[in-house]
Length: 277
Image 1 (tube, rainbow, N blue to C red):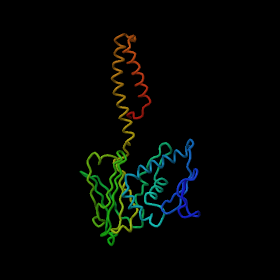
Image 2 (cartoon, rainbow, N blue to C red):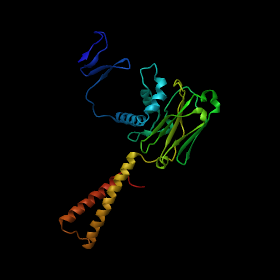
Image 3 (tube, rainbow, N blue to C red):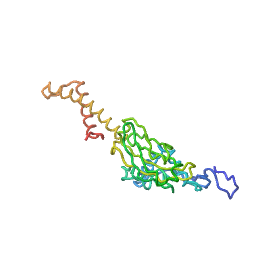
């Protein structure tokens, strides 16, 4: 049942038949509900695009809030809506079912503030050093804060640094353990005014360490190795018993179980993903 709190001419709030009425950011919304049929390939692609985009952005909420918050002011949108819209349209690559992020096209902030010249990133012992030339914007540099985002696609353990330095300092250092420092890293930098009223477009600093395996690929390789280890054990026993009996199968229940497991594991290895090389 829906309620008309503002009279018969006002916006409804609730459910009428297969329609749901509600307010979103001050705007009246109505949507259709009901059973979904079997999704088409285009729908499946859209679902995956949204899932990939959501997975990326949920790890960087603070950065997105600052990076897109100014754009959202005075609109019915919020920062996350705007970031989702941009990345779903501009920062994805591949075709369903292999849609993934194009990290070179990721934009974690969008604004009118100038960026800065001569941005560089270097791996040092114990972490990353990012440098830039603050001279071009000396009138801004004393107030601007530096925001850095380090995406770690292999583990998903991204790190956001929302006030790591001042633009006037010309550099910042991000300490990292060696195992993190040597995995795939996708770094970004932005500049924001001290009062939060201006922000620059984020700048992609380039891939470090190449493209590593994803968490899913790591799990696949681990599963394959577990099955392979067990298969090697069963295979040694199975083939050893055949050899002892001059390739004649022993007519015992234990051997029949062994043979069944040997065949099942062999079939699994032929079809499991995660095979080395």
